[in-house]
Image 1 (cartoon, helix red, strand yellow):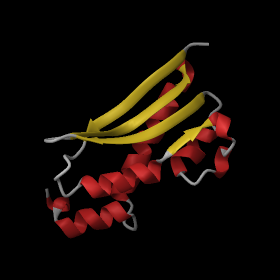
Image 2 (cartoon, rainbow, N blue to C red):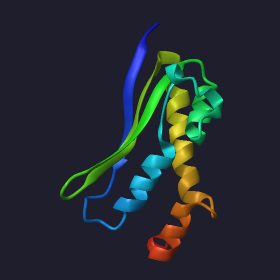
Image 3 (cartoon, rainbow, N blue to C red):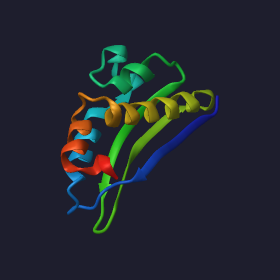
Image 4 (cartoon, helix red, strand yellow):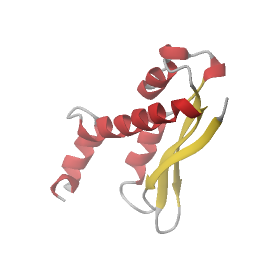
Length: 118
């Protein structure tokens, strides 16, 4: 059984950028999950619920790292080789949902800040 230890990341925000706080909230909402913790599909994170059903996924952890001029936002994950596609698809879908569901905090923030016009 080959294991994949990977990360999916995109450019985040610097410490002084106004999007830093919403990205920290996103980091908290995505959270972390590990198969050995026993939460299974009853975990509070939707991503954990989705990946908990996939027997090939071992763990994931969201991260938000800020630097002086930029940052990184992403998810570390551990899975079997055959489960890597499921992890990537689930993470991308979770990010998409946070930014495109009208009732989500991030959608409201984007509309109020005027970023939706860009």
